[in-house]
Length: 299
Image 1 (cartoon, rainbow, N blue to C red):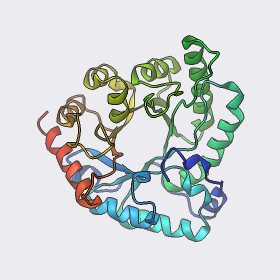
Image 2 (tube, rainbow, N blue to C red):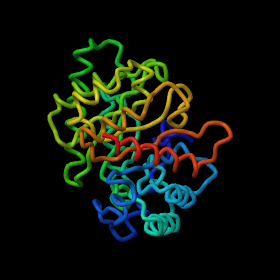
Image 3 (spheres, helix red, strand yellow):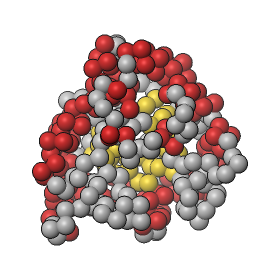
Image 4 (tube, one colour):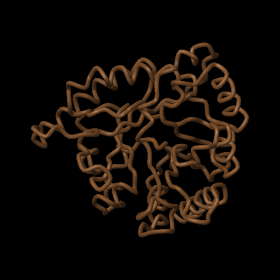
């Protein structure tokens, strides 16, 4: 199951409320030191779906990462699964840096109730996991809207969503999805997303800069990063084509990493790729992290 399907899972966050609260902003002591002063995570939907949550965290830790990103699968965990998951998170020193509450058409005001339900269902479990960031795509366009109407509707929805998350101090990042992946996507480029988040005007609403999607959609990756880094809340890494590890395609990630370091980007760098054929998870993830650190040292 990939992260585009996580929102289909049924709600079970009530189980989370039976467990002690986690510290929302605690970082493992080794986060900065182990990674050259940078924070790295792995989006768990990319990993073998036959692995348990604990097994995934084990592999993430073995590869030298201290962060992981989830969908909303935790909403249907049983109390025993919650106990195991929180124990694994503690054991391997992993921060859950982001979650995906659902997938709603942000430009469609008629979907506001569904958005509200998704966020309210996602918050209790996210708090238990210590996660303080939600990922949203704008999803499907409303055909009757002009581009300006679409933009304004998304701005309004994000302001509303931010208000819902405010008391729990959860940030929202808007992720553009290229039109080759989803032809009805309402926000297909970071150029659109940066305009939207600036109009929202909240420090709690930023952009997820996914270099894979942006390369497929428009390219010009570094210039847009440089001019808008103040609006970037998270970055995702994968090469084009194929969504495999850096170095397998056309994106020269060395220069992207160097620019992230030069700009003093201090948020998570998340690997969202699947290893190319014949490559195993742990060594591939480890190599991707080490290459990123080496490149950033050149800045």
